[in-house]
Image 1 (cartoon, rainbow, N blue to C red):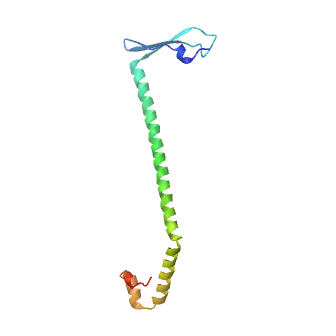
Image 2: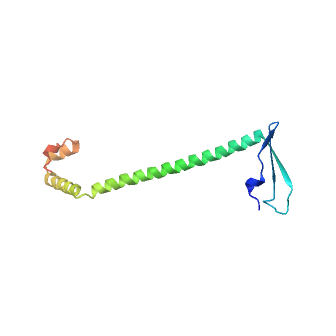
Image 3: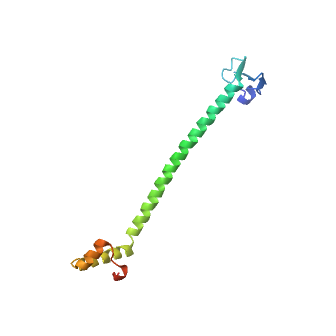
Length: 127
């Protein structure tokens, strides 16, 4: 059996028409006739343009999918960083100390006013 490369000959251009001659022996071995395929350069250019468009569209879709995966990965990394900080023993000590200070000073009207206004000084915080 012949290979496809051996069946088709080199294209010949005559008056802006591409002629490719080959046999259909690889499709139907009992047929050994020659088949002439004619195609104008405009048709060939149109086919190549459509092929390029399809490839560029597929590339754009792949890029969008990759960007979505990258965004998801960044969100997951951020969430893991936040969870790591919240589960840290030092952070838990700070939360406990803040809770103790709030419970100890919640009856003090000046302290409540400072907390409500957001003017409480960190240097006043013993933690």
